[in-house]
Image 1 (cartoon, rainbow, N blue to C red):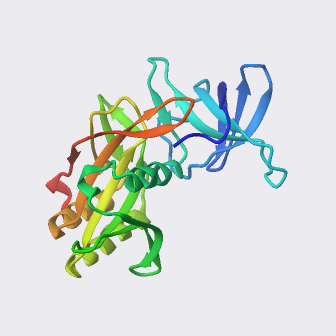
Image 2: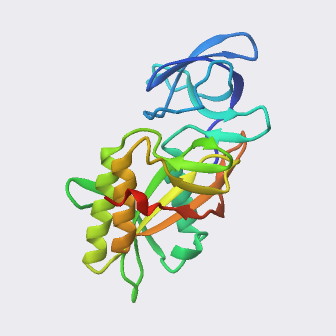
Amino acid sequence: MQFYAPLVPGRLIRRWNRFLCEAVLDTGEIVRAHCPNPGAMLGLKDPGLRVWLEPNDDPKRKLRYGWRLVEFDDGHWAGIDTAVPNRVVGDALRIREIPELAGYSAVRPEVKYGTNSRVDFLLSEPGLPDAYVEVKNVHLLRSGTLAEFPDCVTVRGAKHLRELSAMVVSGHRAVMLYLVQRTDCTAMTMAADLDPGYAAAAVQARNAGVEMLCYDTAIDVQGVTLRHALPVQVSTAYSA
């Protein structure tokens, strides 16, 4: 997935709220930018962080910039746009780059299922059970190289796990795919202290037959692309 326009660098001044931040560009100009991330963004919103913004010239938009990346002092990167994972995974599915799902030729996004929900991708292929794929953005890192999800309570996320479990009962494949928008992680687990309800739902979904996949990403100022499969750790301590 490539960014639509060349990114410009700066330093974060502050994240005003879930959808607005302020940064000083390397030119010295202070700008406000759209923050496309409603989560807690732990470790990604500290003043002074090196950030990269995507400019736009759309007169219909109130803000001229959108926040896309954080560049850490150690050379690693994190993507903060929660819309990016679906674009990255969608591209990878269409060129059959995800081995576990490479048997499917038909990829349909945003298909209605469950209770007032839309699955991120519905995959189909003659002779194979349909595969319902939900995608989650992961960018929380608190210890070592272990990515965690979620970074705040997500009732909607737990609902998706239950709906995927129902698809398994109906005879379909169901996949929860976690995309790590960081370049410094080697495994992924549930942040059970931040959302014990989601951690419990993850255990129940896995036991019901929901497949849990995780991939990390290659990130630079050009774009974000799928990289390597990472192990997913689901603790049974949160199964109740």
